[in-house]
Image (tube, rainbow, N blue to C red; front, side, top):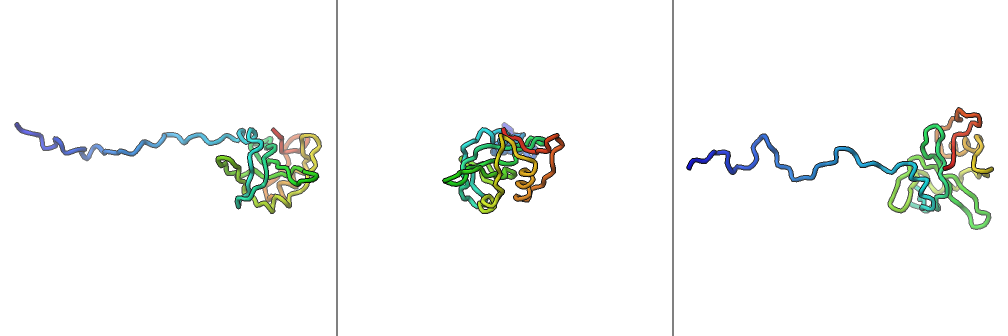
Length: 148
């Protein structure tokens, strides 16, 4: 019985045997920024891994709808809220790592909240302290941040 010379030779040049799993055609969805507002109580750490405190609230840019700042409580007596930038935050399994140092956070301006809002002047002071670009919002109040 004659055999074809291509029988039992494995894949031909036209086919490639590949045992590696196929990569997904689309990247898996990342964590939505709105999830940050649901992470109250999650520990924040600075860029060097030092503990900062538990996330209290998240403030979003009203024009871009992106998270800009979170608050943490500081001090044992006369505790106050300190604003921490969330721009460039790294999301870990049980922490959020911010892109600033604990020393920068300790030097942040003390801001007294009147209700749930910051004044345009306080917003500007925060952005400038952390060397973030700031322009007043095109709203009657001039405020850029809103707490959610």
